Image (tube, rainbow, N blue to C red):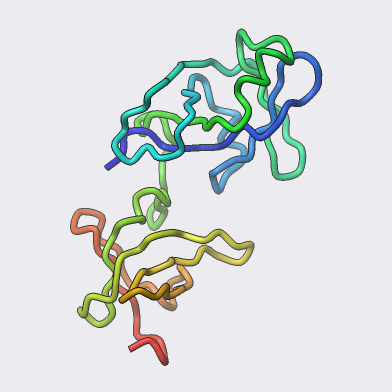
Length: 174
């Protein structure tokens, strides 16, 4: 289980006082309201929780524009300071992440789980696509990708400890 969770990517500058625009990687964009400290890193692959260059930052303020977050970071006060952060990712420690409700999961925890169809191994979850309606599990199966809506109609159970997702029979999938 990863100790750091990616919550967004800095995509551009905003204004002249060092604010940055963040594309959030979270269901709840308002999670930035409670954000205190975080890490900014170059790498988006934190699978081994080892970052080459990790820096701790503190939030000074947040605003929201459509589906993005305008983040003011303490100590980043000029366009030049902020420009160095573009295309970098924002992470938090898992212990500082938002608390999940029952039947909620971090996408990073679903990736790599084994998908089973009627107790028969179907494949490995390699990605989770986000759509307006619902998330979609991308399962790699014998060189093909199978897309499975991540809803109760198609997913009957998830065993976090066994890293196993049980898929309900879908016509044409067997």
